[in-house]
Image (cartoon, each protein chain N blue to C red):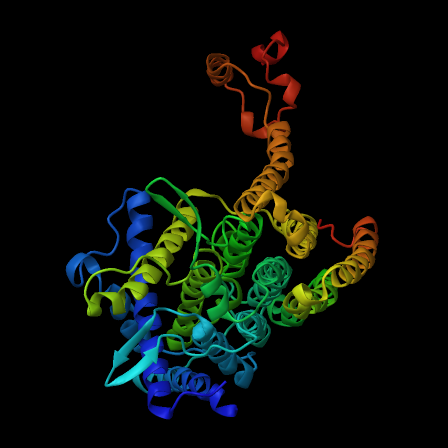
Length: 428
Length: 121
């Protein structure tokens, strides 16, 4: 493959960098606004229309803060850690196509920084390197909360990287390539036409199971709620960045949100056709439509990320590790093998017709997902208290209050006690 | 052939430049009034207990196990990638070969599981 000339390489690299940085700034603002709405607050609304330049103001503020380093910190590593974290996040998106081919400054520029044959392996490699930033930050701080946060983060990230690797592998098997442009190209066709509705051949339909795995691992990998244990405030203060302040803290913050953006973009690229979509209108519109599609799809996933934060409580650590190791890993392996069998057995199964085959595969995926979710639902039900009519419960509390009992000193109620049919208990 | 890497190299340079300049500029802009209290490790506002600073080098051994298991299974996932690319050409032979490989892995996975290597207290 022939490389691009220097100027167009410079154009696309700068363009991608500015686009990603601006999107990240907007994302931080957007997250704060959306979460505020979910919690019936107002959120940042002072600077610019609807507070849109709040992130910039926060960044400037952090630059003017004193940059503290604890006495016991390992100085060199302490400084290197945020650099590693931010740099890996900043180069991770290199392989993601964020638009079609446009003409800029009299040159044809393809809006993708780098399109190697190893493709998404780059994302995988960079997210693995990002772990270094976190574990070194925790270790170099030299005190206990950052260290615990650092090892927690790295254990969580490496555990979920396995699931992510398997989700990637399933897509690679399905499309037979690792090259991002080819994966996007393979999704540009039409799967079926139901009257006026055209169903695109996006990977999400046949690979719904891989998508589910990838989505979960992406949330865990970016350490977003409900998987944000590394920053469990009640236990380990701020996690690995407890000792960081000023611009170094800003770098971690930037890296975290940029990873969130990049993983949403990877999700769009792998499963939702990347920048593909119907093209129409005049030339200039056709040139920017792919970028708009890409941004719109990515924004959709970012909203889901924020929505999860607004909705779900944090996982317990053992549950988190169980999900990664005991569910996502074995199921991911089985799914990759199943995909391989389907891909190789295509000719034998051709009698069914390609469209039906894809549908069949999607159905298998949905069934597998349901089977996966069912046991955890059943477990949650078992752990809940037996249902008691609300009126009975209220009565019970009142009775206790009237006789001046101190419920807090009593041990937790055994579940069979909740029925309230024990007269002794009620008198006390 | 190396020209292919040019855009990536440029992006890398931009990224490192951005991070480096940010940190250097911020170090010049911010105030610099160090003090013994500011140099302490964080302990929720109270005087740092000696344990916090000494314990900075101790953490549960459990995490080493996670790291080891990660390496085993991650290497295995990397083996899947070239397999994914050539699968169509090699056909059933490749499927069978990978099935055997994954079965062997599952065996060790099951061993770790039964030994309690994936249990958290």
